[in-house]
Image (cartoon, rainbow, N blue to C red; front, side, top):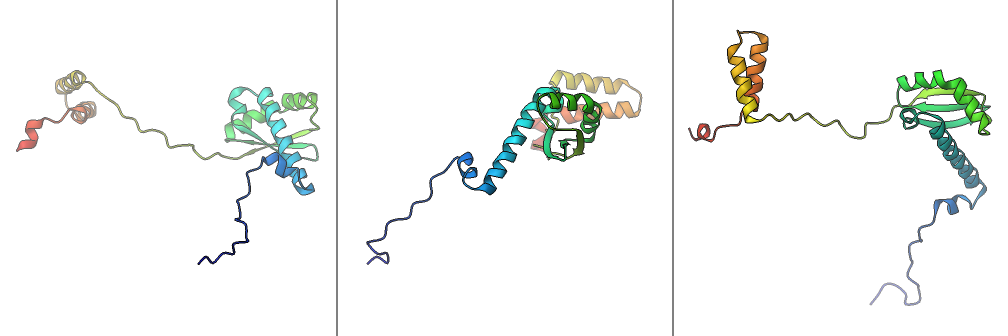
Length: 163
């Protein structure tokens, strides 16, 4: 015996809808959509106006009372943007943006992935040559460092493990 009525229809999950369609339904979402479109257009224009190394690390913020806020990935890029401010303002105004001032702020981005650890590889011949060089040097920090490096890269001898 089923606990569901035979007359009820199964409930289907709603179908996915494009974001543009959802944002166009109400006035509140329409304002949000306009802001998103403005930011996307500003990002495209900044990408065309700024050098590649800056365009990849700068994000547009909002425009309030004619002041555009730009977010730089780090302080060195923010300083470079401040140097480019007069030219950038003129170029943005030429493209039709009602901007009279720039506010540059630093917004660090999280590291995408930790940097890879270095894994130096040395050939057996190079290891032997390094060990021979360390043996010819007088006792010194350099001699000790070369001996440690040679020992670190020396492959273990299978006969040593038997004892």
